[in-house]
Length: 251
Image (tube, helix red, strand yellow):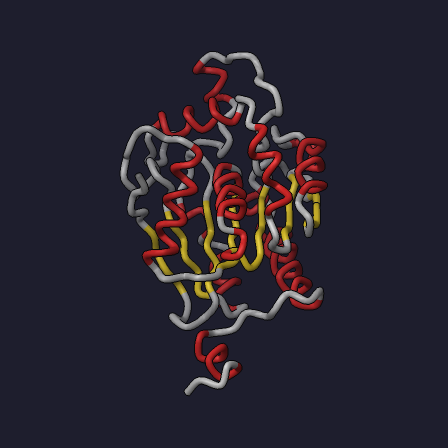
């Protein structure tokens, strides 16, 4: 069952929405440097804490599908019918699940160094090794349920053929950012992902896993350039509900 995610909203209420999903062991505040750029670009920015993180409920178990359902429930709660969805690491994987489940709801998709599960199961790891491979670079000073992190890592090391098979169902223009060889997310695996998403651009920013934190200016430019290019490539420019009504001849 979905839980009500703690979230904050910045920007005009009638602006097109962009939803930002953080990585495992992190929180919504990780986007604080990037949010103003999106607001300035004309977006209403929604920043939730994922289940088990920061201000959101600790509600076990933590399945990858729970994260998907929580995000969809948040969109329903806020009455957001179409959004630009941006996710880092675990948040990026959750974003792919949302885009696979309801592709018509995603206007544009940005995936920052998301984990890609194997097509066949990998060997088991000890808990200590799992924590060392934290998909969101966990910080013990942050507030999160450790099981939320280890559960996600464990699941992402298991075979997930249905996820790979559903990647072609993602219809939104997609930007896939790789952190390059310095990241524990293999660039070759992300190249496989990009090849299966129909409208996907793969860009490498070789600074490691946390591109938006390590190279915030490069991240900002890459994302904003992509959002602008999506319009040039035929994807409709963001519009407010009022503008949509005018186009449809409504009062």
